[in-house]
Image (cartoon, rainbow, N blue to C red):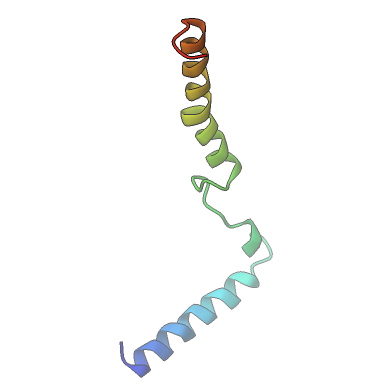
Length: 68
């Protein structure tokens, strides 16, 4: 990218950011992706898919006296 393209790109980003900040119906701070790990849905998916099955597996191994 040359200097002119970088300037146009940064200007377009700034315009979009200012336009989205002016949107009262759907403010900028509410715009997030549901599938990000930091979102409540993402955290729920992480617990449901990874942490709970690992706990159940370790508990079953403990009941079978394979681990103590």
